[in-house]
Image 1 (cartoon, rainbow over the protein chains, first blue to last red):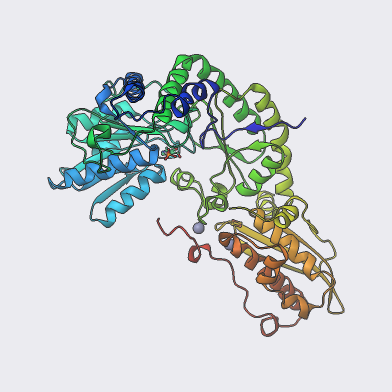
Image 2: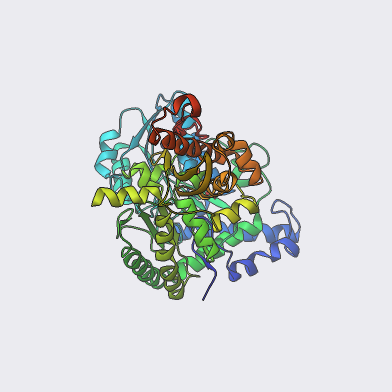
Amino acid sequence: MKRFVYADNAATTPVSQTVLNAMLPYYTEKYGNPSSLYAIGREAKKALEEARANVANHLGALPNEIFFTSGGSEADNWAIKGIAHELAKKGKKHIITSKFEHHAVLHTTEALEKEGFEVTYLEVYENGIVKPEDVEKAIREDTALVTIMYANNEIGTIQPISEIGAICKKHGVLFHTDAVQAVGNIRINVKDENIDLLSLSGHKLHAPKGVGALYVRRGIRLPNLISGGAQERGKRAGTENVAGIVALSVAMDEAYANLEERNERLIRMRDRLIEGASKIERSRLNGDPVKRLPGNFNMCFEGIEGESLLLKLDFAGISASSGSACTSGSLDPSHVLLAIGLPHEIAHGSLRISFSDQNSEEDVDYILEVLPGIVSYLRDISPLWDEIMNQNK
Amino acid sequence: MAYSERVMDHFANPRNVGELAEANGIGEVGNSKCGDIMRMYIKVEDNVITDVTFKTFGCGAAIATSSMATELIKGKTIDEALKLTNAAVMEALDGLPPVKVHCSVLAEQAIKAAVADYYTRQGIDPTPIVGKIEDCDHHDHCGCGEH
Ligand SMILES: Cc1ncc(COP(=O)(O)O)c(C=O)c1O
Ligand code: FES
Ligand SMILES: [Zn+2]
Ligand SMILES: [Zn+2]
């Protein structure tokens, strides 16, 4: 029987009922401007600062190390451009990152390259994991910043963040991590893991779109992002998105309240999906099978093209995603899949399914019921599949 | 990016899909590296394309343009078929998103390739009649430009 399965939680998540209930009053009753002195202003200010302390607490940070932003992209841009420009004054114009960062990072480092910065893009190997020793080898006298994502948004692989953090600390290089996909799925302690800057985004963990945060370790000089009022200690002016910030804080509470139990369940679902889909001939799992986000499934099916697969899945009520060139708006397949060494033609046939706590075992059953038939239909009409079969004879 | 209803219809219910046993001309264009391959099968009798089918590896637009192109040339003379432009295929589909225009070019080229193969099989040099068949090279129309 047809069902609606939202299986693209790495793209965005629905706002949870608890989060929605917590944030709504800040639009209608508690709408004061946190900078105002009167009661409803103070009430908003209090909510804002409580949220800041709570977000900080979940990360093992201090409240004044948290700066709220409009989301992950802004946090990434601010951290990377800010540190680069600050340290360029001391002659440090080298940045280390990986080949498979989110575009919010890669397009930022590319912009910096045009300004004269030098950027090293580290390999991520077939399993989609950066080697800490590569980070160490790449560090130079003039390295300003290492920025490596906590978990990859397409293939879900989790990076050795605390090892990289320790190396950066040893060499006195600042370390930023884009933890947009990790926050709410993995317990993070910025102090233990020697993280100097960390980006996060609300809409990946059941808070609304357009709210996020940047953690900046105390003592790091980061240039102001937006000039104006004194909000965010003058670093990012603009009347705060109080409702969104409250939502982010509550969403983190929810995500971390039952993390282990939820992850156990998601891993079971994910692995069953991988096992089931692996029965489709000429399929392969992308990224490390174990060091990956609990809800992330990413596989390639040879001989078919991802966008067609997504459209067919959509007809069946399943929302998923692909790294296919055809879905990207550009005509090259996902840089992530190319970075893990997949040939173009195989990268085209990728499917990402990402679960959240709102998915169930019935969703897995349904996907496994529908997927093989769609793959085989698309292969039936694919001249590339004919070629693959002929070569194999 | 949104597809028109026509495109969705031809993607969901492609016309003339599959192999054609009696084909006397088969053309294939595109390459898997770039993302789309179209293979067109035609059966020509007395200069008329009496039957046509296709197989496509590609996006929704690639499948829909193949399907529409087969509809537009079925029953037509070779001359008429060769005059079919990608613009006509797009128009028949109520348009395509800009990044998908090349998929319609591929459909036009696939017809030419099939006709060329037909002539070759007849012992006729197709080049003066059909012209050059462009194999799709996405790298000049990749909109990204960043990497
Ligand atoms: C790893 C990663 N970084 C950054 C972002 C951008 O976050 P936002 O959409 O909040 O700007 C996303 C998601 O879109 C992401 O997955
Ligand atoms: S097949 Fe990739 S854009 Fe059409
Ligand atoms: Zn290409
Ligand atoms: Zn093309």
